[in-house]
Length: 626
Image 1: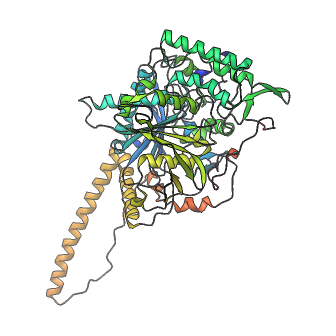
Image 2: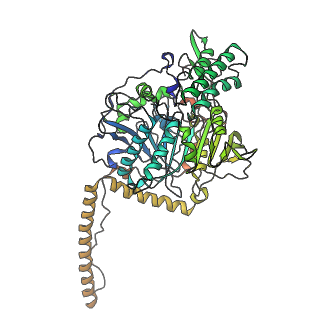
Image 3: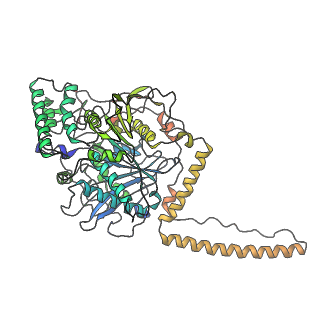
């Protein structure tokens, strides 16, 4: 979530959390790891009902410094017409993708009593999900000493190493269509990783080309200059400051200084002098409340937070997420290595302070080339200040790609903005041209999936091209630009023969994978046993055939005695016990249950019950701990 690089002054540095040592898991140094080493059998506090097939643990990417990236992989809930993997990355740099897993797009949210509840807008509905804590040192990832990364190409190289080893352990996913998604500073990570994958695919040694199909970047820090300039514009638009006022004049002066500095020194990923614009705005919102200083929440301007945090204590789910991820039974379930010496932290200050990307070109320089190869979505929540939608819109307006500039389709003609209506409520706007789509979410914060999980999954399903007619579900009422009928699916009840057949094929495939993942020794044992039993059966059948032939010749046509039936051998692998076919009917029934406040632990969300406006505490009113 955090864009920690902006908060460099002492007054804006978030505190680090001390933690207990992680529980023992499969050591990333052991080598020769199999999928079974990463299998997640259950999670503490999980709800009743089917449990998604999961794997988690560490993969080494830097043997010299014991650098390991932590991942959490979740299989798709329902098989679509093709296999897809969506990678999710949070920002920072140095902020854990467990934010995305447990507060945004993953299958569960954490309640105040530290239980898990279903996220009805989880992105694993029709795609496999892969969350990765990166760069090294982020979240559950680790590295020895101070061997943190400094530049974006280093990060991308580590990620390609990670994927290479991941696909060696899980080869069944290597031919999936791959989409990379994330938010905030991941707007730098995602384009660099995508380009690194393209470069890797071009190597003669790459026998299997990874099918990277598209990128999704939410509230992204992609182009620094328009984003820095947008702070003042956003402040004027939302009446934080007024043109000609003392604050307005100060902001205009800071913007001019920022532009001059960038013109003279070139564009860098972050410019400390330019960060003063945001800091000035937040300082101006400071006021006394209940005996303490509060300020606007830079991630959701409808809310307040204590000063100087100004949003670093948000979202409220962090209050239960931090202790949950530090529990020994949780780290053990997720196969967290004992080499991870400290407890989980949302954002690692040591990673952020090292990863300054001083010699890296901003990711905006990569987008035009990437857009020639794949579609990209840039989406924004309109209540976010720190990576606000005005900066993203200006980025698009200034960018030249595929023979045009911005969303201009021909001289003086611009791609239309289409209204988006979700379940009868105005949800935002869509605008597209030449492989780029921009989506603005109304009433949404810096973490759009936190506010609107089902709406963001609707966006994902459209982007992935999920064919609801092929799958057999019923579409959600989501319409763009006056669409007469819903065209995409975010749930529903599969009722087609084809869907049932696909589910059976997936289960059969999963059963075989379970055998495969258990290791070659178990496989050889089963194969040997099968050969022995097959030989016994063959011999028995031959003896019976000879006996029956002899009996018929002697007038005896009936078989005497009771023939033993050979039962299917049991395979002692817990993976098989968790392979349960689940249909979205389960979702639809639970969708009808009682309303839940989205700040009560994430069990519900603002788009769960008829698309109601997100709940929040108005400025000037008591809102408790944020």
